[in-house]
Image 1 (spheres, rainbow, N blue to C red):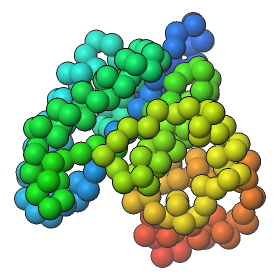
Image 2: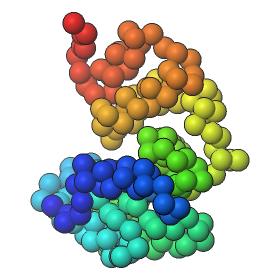
Image 3: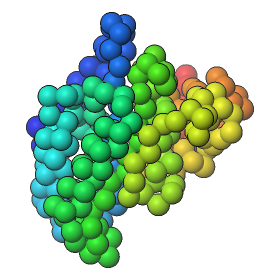
Image 4: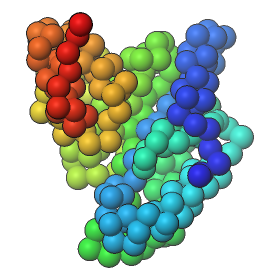
Length: 222
């Protein structure tokens, strides 16, 4: 639909880059179209597809040859940017955000502008391992949404804490259940980190949270 890398492809690229260990540094970013369901409900899915195509084009154009852009599914995009310079990242995220809003000034809630929420983290400074890096970027996306959406959050250890501190302080079950755009694999990663570094919930609790988040009636392990 968007002409970007698929989720499987962009994730494979990111994992390979973290395993290369050739001294390069880069940033991953998760970009979510705020209240996209409102677009589909108000204008129809055909229009929603046009919006996703345009957003994808804007992201790809801004990233250009300096990285990779993919669609994670639904209204979520994933980018790999060949810089960790905070000033450059802010300019890039701000430009993507502004162009999307200008392209769709009346497609947001209440006929307002369409906005984005973005979370990002840098390799290898923030983490040299893909799953942890993704967790940090995803946590920053969660923060952006919690603060009202329409913003980007760049992971900063001093401000946001380490993976262990984040898990101990609370990516709790209610937060997990409220992530309507979270796919099953992403949720399992979050649960793993919460078990590894946090409160160590029971298997029953983990399965219950998985069911709630994915609208599954029940899960049994034979």
